[in-house]
Image 1 (cartoon, rainbow, N blue to C red):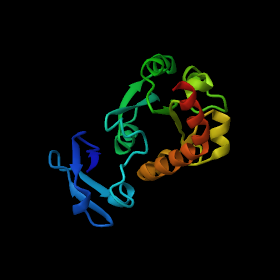
Image 2: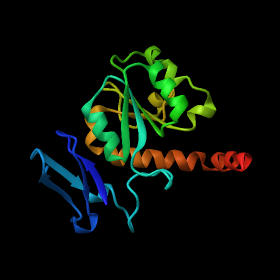
Image 3: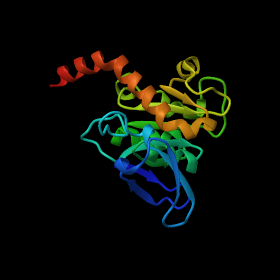
Length: 196
């Protein structure tokens, strides 16, 4: 099943991907009639692959923290990749939540972009390396290019996404997260072996 959420009324919907064609399709929300679109190719590759590349033990409902400026588009993006968005206005609040819950994704949407480092976001960005490895950090910024590795390094995040590219967020996130997992797979396996 593909899970989406209406961009207008926030109604969660489940779609049977076996009944969808291999192209983008549009349909009205059954509740508010807002035009929605879905492309099953963004969710399914091969045989029934899950839409979100995280542990199977953590299904739909795993949390994504949104920090800074609230945005319905970011909440929708989190839901499209299978996460339940949890919003915090300040980085200090987000850090407190993070240290208790360890959400898998942190979406940083600063109200104002500054040159690196983002002072207002330092409480959440400046976690210890051991704590940072527990999540995937994404910075959303109008003045940066999606997948800009230099900007990601300078701002201390795993991925940079320009809001204009949110329609392709599912694929961008999936590809970047898969690359991140491959890059750190040997270190992750050593850490798991040490804790066993």
